[in-house]
Image 1 (cartoon, rainbow, N blue to C red):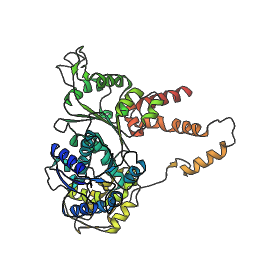
Image 2: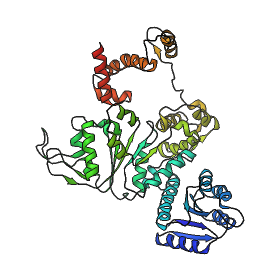
Image 3: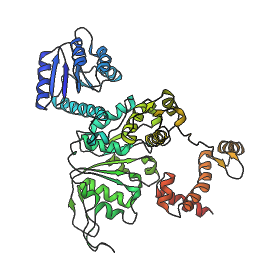
Image 4: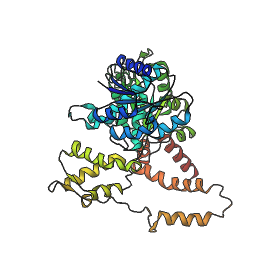
Length: 463
């Protein structure tokens, strides 16, 4: 049962918050000063702290850092009406959220639920139960950036609104989606992950919406689509930028009407699911190019969670290493400072997924000694891109091209001109290497297949 510490010198507020905690099924302990609260925090495990700003002795603002040194529990600050400067200072000092007096108990309830969800996510990686699903699918990290991610996830737990997760490949978008399911109100329902890019373009509609017998060749029986399979739970659409425009219209209708019509059927089927989607692409750019509908974009992005790259949170690397060694390798190692320093010095274009692979490989090399050192890290190849045939680096080619065209008044936009030049060389070759498959080439290039097709058509037209 979650335990809440209430620190306020007004007895009526302590009583009201304690009664709210009781109604929510939480335990609570109250005190009238920060000094007493700090003593409690040093002796008991807490899941959240409600802290008034104006207290006798140490003020709530000055106590925030002291509480954080004793307990990882999220801190909800109570501040006077209109005192925006204090509220901002509280957040800057590490408070989870602030509540303004006189407060609405419904708002306090929601804030407490979000704080408890955040607390559960932070403690999940430390669980010792091997059968605990929340341990298996936990996001790892104690850095400020990851604490902000935990907070954003917590904000989604009291709603069924769609969530859009953005971030580079390998940053943990599916883990984030699973956390939203796990800590949300639909945790008892199914979690249905769908990689849009992996769907057969010709059968994507049938896969998502289902079909009835005889709808097309090979449809020998009725089949529920993935959307229906997510009924009562969460549907996770990964690489959502890859949804064909024609299907985007139908998905928008499903979200608006809460019903899906199987292929070949004129009878809609009611469905109740929460949509979580993810992408590593710039959807606003896709909208500008006509590859993604703006109305669907804003429908998907009621909440947006942006995941940081590993290079932005390198302080989390030691914790991630220990997690991978325990969960993936299953052997205890002595991890040297040199090993960690070497990992922190890398750029990690593949993010956490790449780190996991490197740690597993290093552990295989060090299995006999049981000591991980910098020597066990296989050097990542970082060869310079060259212009085949000339031996020049890409930087040399760009430098030469800029000098040749800098004073050319007939070229209005050097940036657009150079990108067009790159497209003309890159895209046809990538298309050929993918056996003339638009989807495969687009996935490898990291752009939408519609964008690739349009650009190739323009290039072929120019030729």
